[in-house]
Amino acid sequence: TPAGPMIFEVGDLSPNGMLLSSENRLALQLSPGHLLNVTIEPRGSFTMSVSLQGQICRVIDDRNPQTQNLVRHFGIKITKADEVNQATYLDLLKEILKSIKVRTG
Image (cartoon, rainbow, N blue to C red; front, side):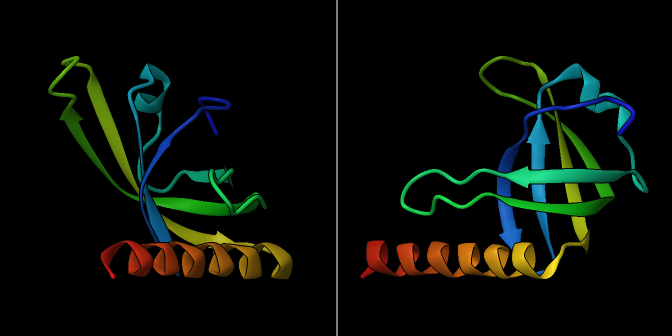
């Protein structure tokens, strides 16, 4: 990527993509069409990281209401993942859904 390594917050995950956001000013260099190499390092009981490639499809800028910093949100479409990482990603999604069901009863 033009900006180099960055840390993003995960807003949403789906089988085909994700919503990532960052207050890092380097994120302003990223725009639709850019390819990102993404590594997801989950917290909690799911300990396996996932590496994949995604393409930025949409960008939305917003303000953090507490800090007034610019927050850039990225809609990412997964474009490439090997079999192991694709399976691990789907396992992660299943684990998240299971966790949500446990919390909501």
